[in-house]
Structures are given as structure tokens and as C-alpha cells.
Length: 203
Length: 430
Image (cartoon, rainbow over all chains, first blue to last red; front, side, top):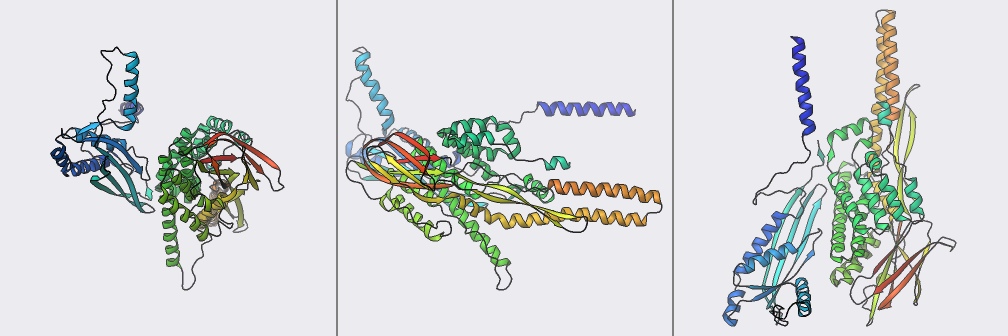
């Protein structure tokens, strides 16, 4: 009887070890779009969503689109400039710019032209086509659409901290500037405040 | 067990140091990479990342250096949360049971060298991010000192307030200088002006750490140059930051028992460099001036923790010695109370064994925590010159106290243009 119990226990132990050996140390699970996870307190996807949603709403509620369409009878053309990172974190600001671009273009009331870096590529391609593409298929030169407005912005951070605790505020500003007159037709700023606590002791 | 706890965590870096001293930073970096497994096992990934990150920087592997120094920075941040079990163990065994948390100067200077890495990679915006992060850390350090001072005055009795031996380093002139030059070069003049004022304040408010005058170039660096000319700045590093060594004292408690106290001490490795001359091709020569004595700052920043380490070591050493004393006393008591000679003999044998074991454990386990990075520099020097646009070769002549050139660094094909960064860097291992 005792030896049978012993055998079962040994078997259970072996099974446990086998399973423990097979289990992977990396686990991945898919997250929903609305799930919010903050692991380090640094700038993350949730901040991007909060900021861009608010800024886009603010820019679309301004009357610059309606004014332009009223006076010129056409959609305003916007070019995305630079969103400068003046924060204390390495932030890829091109995500903010791209989200802005997508939102504006999807209104069908704003036309967008390629940004400065991409335009250089396009110009190179157009010039090459003049030499290497057939006459019928080569695109014409000098037919770029000039932008009416330039979108630019900046990300800044302010940190108030003591050891183990910090309040980190991100200020993201954006503005649309009339390229011809340098007049600002819309300025918006949104902020995200985070309280980051770090335990002094842990198990 | 005693053998296990006595296991030394020091690592042999002779090969790395040999290459480093010759100025073969790439070779030193490769040597260290070969030691990665044993290094990480003995001293943890944080210290490896700091050392490898610095050597990669000197060896001009800037992207790699950034990855390593970022890993080190993250490690310091994560290790702020101490394990309770490891902390308890540190009261029973020694401080090496705790994860290395990094010294304040290591945390700060990691950002400085990351900023320099980004500068070499032609990413001024990212370099500025690092310098802003550096400023934030300085503010945190200031806050830390304020909390500490408040705690000290709260715990003082009557008129007696415990004096703090550290001069409380919390503002690096080197960091502000880099910020000033970088901000100037990317057209952020307000930031450049602010950084210049902050640099001057660093000298004014921390006279113990900056007992020399502000380098003369600072006064001229923000003056707009003439047309088709640009202000160029040079930052040079020499020597190696201090290392920690163990100081052991044995104090007798009784005729048969003693307390072993093992404390870490910062030991300077001062640079032999006394002056640095910069020779610019077809232009002339000028001297660099001392901006920051990083070795002094490292020692000073360590002083902040010295009291805590000392108190903890005393408590731990006394606990261990008391343990041995209790074993001796109990053995003696039980021996005299024994019912027969055989029982007394058994008690004596077991007691002697336990007492011996306790003393061995106490002696072997009481080790100071001498972990620390090895390759931060000892001194930072700066200089500036206004040059017409063009390409230049630069020789940096490092001289010792007798004026003898002991090291030479040649920087070739450096350009001065209307736009772009104009901060050049040189490193001397001596």
C-alpha cells in the first residue's frame, strides 16, 4: 500500500517537473484597442490616442476649413511639417503627425500633400521618369499642388518628482500656419498628466 | 555555506584595462564582451552595461553604446525597488546580496555620454532629450538631498544637528555646458542662455566641487561669430573615475571573540594629465581648461551613502559577533548543567563546532560592497575657438605636470559649416 502511494507521488512529481520544464517563460496575449496598460510610466500608445483624438477634434471644430472653402471654393491643402520632440523622452512624433494626417484627409474637406522628406523622393522619381520611362507613361513635371497650410507642433514634458514618486505631464501642441501669410489659423494644445509611483521595497 | 558566502564577486579586468590604457578602446570593448557571461554572473547586468557602454562610446560604437547605457539606466531605475528578502539577507550576510542600484554619478553621467553618442550620430534632437533627462535627474537629486536634510534635522536633538559631510552634488557644469553648446547649434538660444546661467550657478553654489574658475570659453561661446565663421567647442576626457576598495577592521569583543567590520571606500585614480593643448591645422593652438572634476564628484556623491553603509555594517557585524557569543555562553551554561560527563562532552563538541562555524561564517561573509563601474573618466576639459567655414585636422596634446606630452589624439577631417553641430570630443585614457 505504502509503496503504491509512493509510486503515485513519484509519478506526480515527475509530471510536475516535465510540465514545469515545458512551460515557456514568454507569454503573449492580444490586447483590445481600449485596453490601457502602463508598465513604466513612459509615453505610450494610450497617451498617443488621448492626445491625438483631442487635438484632431479641436482642429476640426475650428472654422478654418469652412472659411477657406467659403473664400476659395476648394478644399484647403495641408502639408505636415515637423512635430518637434522637446521632451525628456525619446518619442516618435511622426505617429502623431500621421494620425493627424489620416484624420484630416478622411474628412474629405481637406487635401493633403506629401511631407517634405517624401516630396524629395517623389521629385527624384519624377525626374528619373523623364529619362527612363516611355513618353506616354512618364508623369509631367511642375504639377505639384502647393500647400495652403503647414501643420507643425511640439511635445514637451514637465516633471515634478521626489524619490519613488513623480508627476509627469506631457504637453502636445499643434498649429496650422497659413504658408502665404504666416497667419496661424488654428492652435491647439492637449496634455496628459501621470502620477508614477515606484515602491521602495518589493518581494 | 561559509565558502559560498565568501565567494568574491570581483572580476579580473586586466586584459580590458591593458587595452584601455593603450587607447585601444575597441580592443578593450571586445575583451569585455568576451567576459560578459562571467561579469554578469558576478556583478550583474547593470554594471556590465555601464562598463561596456562607456568602452563602446570611447571605441566610437555610438549606437551600441546607447543601447548599453540605456539598459544600465533602466537597470538603475528598476533596482530602485529593493527586494525585501535581499535586504534582510544584507543585514545577515553582506550588502552584496542586494541588486546593485548604481551610484548617483553613474546615473547622471550615463545621460551625458548618451547625449554625446547622439551628437556623434548626428541626432541633436535625441541628444537634447538626454540632456533634459539629465536635468530632471539633477532635480530629483536635489529633492533627495532636501528630504535627507529634513530627516536629519528632525532626528537631531536640541541644538545639535548632524552635519552632512557631502557637499551635495546636484548640478553638473558639464551637463549644462553640453546643453548650452548643443542648444546654440540647433538654434534654441533661450535654452542655450538658460544653460549658461545654470553652469555659472553650478560653480557658484558648489564651490567645494568646483574650486577653480569657469573656463574662459564659456563667456564667448554664445557670442555670434562673424560671417562665414563658426564657434567650435572641444570637450576632452582624461583618467578614470574612482573605484571602491574594501577596508577591514577587527575589533576585539572578548578574549575569544571579535567583530569584523568591512567597509567600502572610494579610491581616486587621478589622471596624470595636467594640461591639454589643441593644435588646429593652419590656424594655431590653444589650451583646454578644466570644467569638471568627475572623480571628486563621484567621491562626494558616495559620501551621501557612507553614513548609512557604516551604520548598517556595524549592526550586521555586531549581530554576527553576538551570535558567536551566545553560542559560547549557551555551550558553557549547558556544559556546567550537564547530568553526566558523557552529556557534557557531547555538548562541548557540538558547542565548539557551532562556535567555530559561526566564527568562520562571520569572518567569511562580512565583505564590503565594492561594486562599481570602472570606465567613467576622471576629468572633463573644455575649450573653444572661432574658425572660418572649412575642414580641419586637430591634434590634442595631453601633457603631464612636467610639460611632457604623454598622449596624443588626432581628430581628422572635422568640418565647420553654417549649420550642424560643432562640438568635438577627445578621450585620453591616462
